[in-house]
Length: 251
Picture 1 (cartoon, one colour):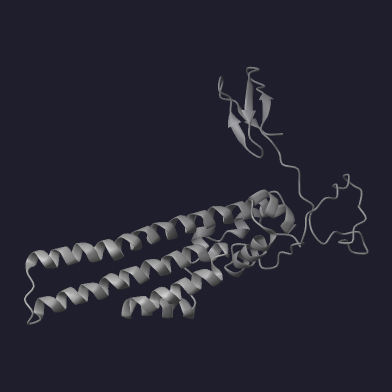
Picture 2 (cartoon, helix red, strand yellow):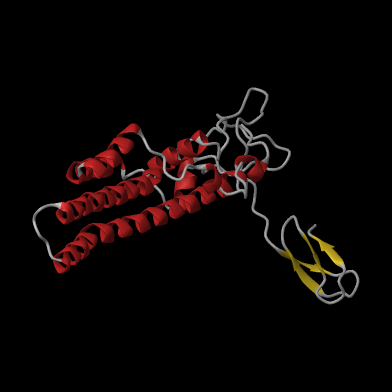
């Protein structure tokens, strides 16, 4: 099945980036419960967050969410410890200022420092997945790759990861939900122009059910008709001659 409007049709975001269409953190009911437990009773929230990491961290799109859960759990722990300090101030038990400051510093090191580390890890994981989504979109929209094995080889992911990532990107509209992908790698040579290749993925009339990958065009040197100088022109673009300003088209 064709992909429609090329790259622009696959990326509905404001600036044509998958991150514009994907949620910052996709949270399930379990995630929300984990965050709530982290702010109410930090040890329970930590256990739930670790369970979530153990069961879902193998998914590329879950890594950022899981790190964010740990961030909230440790922030929740700081809030609870801060409540202990405030309660000490207003209790009948006298606590000197130096002790309170020492407690705040210790609580900050125990909770806020790990929280900052996990927040940074979440941001990095989200950026890496956004970059991976850009790779998928380029390979599918520009290079016309339709085999998950080829996508796995080109992105350095396992084929299982690719399948999960593609479903996730289709779920949020980054990729057309009507796109069809084939498992394994495409090892058959492309048929010559004007000749239909016999394939199990063709209709009785010879029309392919998917589009073969197109050869990638490279920049080439074009001689300026005005001054005769050689200029490099990118595929599908035009440029001005570096010497006389004549417009040169890629042809």
